[in-house]
Image (cartoon, rainbow, N blue to C red; front, side):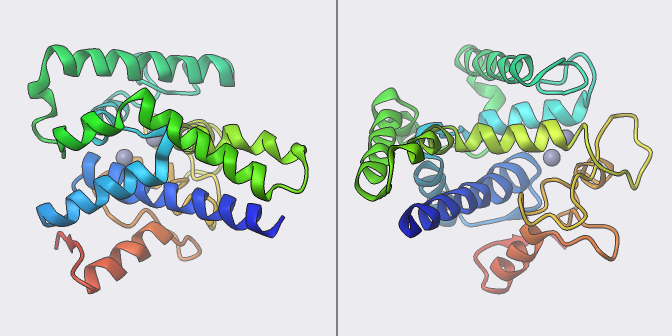
Length: 241
Ligand SMILES: [Zn+2]
Ligand SMILES: [Zn+2]
């Protein structure tokens, strides 16, 4: 039981770490810089952390910037305002992700301003890689789960990346309070966002998309930003001044 709990929490926050730091704040918004070597480490960490549900940084960046540009309008790739329920929302997101893949295949130049590592990505963006991670989750649960009931958590591991995307994009544009009256429906869902490391301050983030700190009010704490400050201190990354 304790092994499952530790594994679940570790996977949740490691996957969240690469999503908020590497895919969102770095690949999409370029809030800081890093050396080509550190960037490669992040690619590897993202592939390990997201495993079965690995999201390509360039594709994530393209779709995310489209989200900012058309927030909660017709062309937003994932807006709860444009979808009536969870399923149509997830389906629309998946359709847009697939369309994005096609778009990159037909016009590779559009990924130019996003981080890419073609040799590595060819290796991990495959069914073999994704299924081998799924197999590892199953084996872990077979060995450590005290009962088969725990197996219902395996799909959560397999869909960790999109699940985090769902929580942020659905609740962050549907439930919560607003600090700013923007043209979209963005909300700050949790006053202290321990669950999603600052990603649930969507209203603040849409107001200041390139600001590394998503917290604005005195009671808000952006744990993702605190992580950036620590990495900046240790010179792993360089925050833009
Ligand atoms: Zn948003
Ligand atoms: Zn953003």
